[in-house]
Length: 267
Image (cartoon, rainbow, N blue to C red; front, side):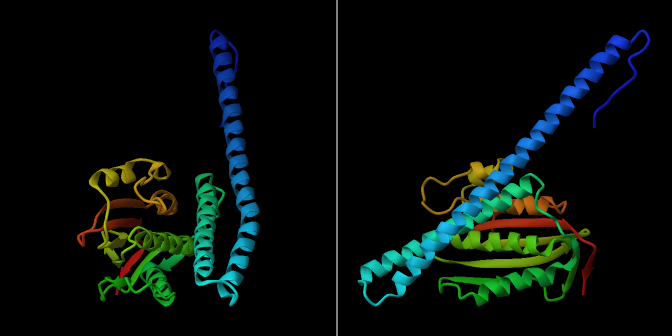
């Protein structure tokens, strides 16, 4: 807020300088807010404009894929177009959400939820999607833990868990087992997603924990960088006063642990 003090007496000149500095800071703050809003709106607009032609590309490619009048080679190309277009669509959605979260334009609708049930539902949804044979998910939560309540935006939490599971799938092209668990410790709810895949180096783990995620790019592969998906996870958990810790899994792969203050945990 702008600070103004009376410009009277022996210290009137100092008071005037303080008031002027306060006005300048307030003006700069307002200009920054307008720029951030404009940037977020621009990203949202571009994302919307790209989705329409991208949907057309996916639609036409789908028709080609199912056509009886093209060669097997062309059908494979159509399938690849659909796959890469879907990937682009997901990246656009991630970029839009990351922008809204960064500039506090994404509504956070918190209410008390049982995290055990929410996370389990995400796992079930992935299993029901028909994952490729080389991937599997194991539910590692202690059977005695049936309730771990937190104030949370359920949809955003599900998005965070989905991002972590998809991250394991995207970065292990030869397959892996994904282990998902919920635990309670010291009035915190701890959600863990880890795998037995290829993992990453200790150096990259350090960077992922301490550098802006969107600056991290694995140049040795054409696959999606870890960055944007993990950035969204960090933003979502941060909005719930929680923390994100990335490390090497005991299973040999990648591990992400989310810690969020809980309200009630137990049977």
